[in-house]
Amino acid sequence: MIHLDYRSASPIYSQIEQGIRDQIRAGVLRSGDKLPSVRELAASLTINPNTIQRAYRELEQQGWIATVSGKGCFVCDR
Image (spheres, rainbow, N blue to C red):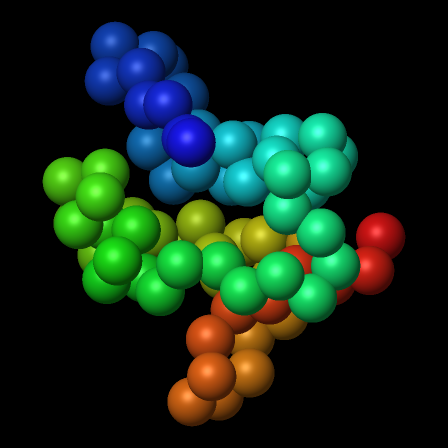
């Protein structure tokens, strides 16, 4: 579960990125695991879907996840 601190100086999208990276490092999320859809995660965290999209885009640029068009986002081998 990703915990958000709305009082933190760190942006929400950055906290989501860090939460997902922490889950990958801890083995909670493994290579090939599918991440929740942008809408699902936004609804569960009650935040704007654009924030989730930005976090996913940053994670993809850093090589943590890969997006498969029409299928979703998946954890990459690290």
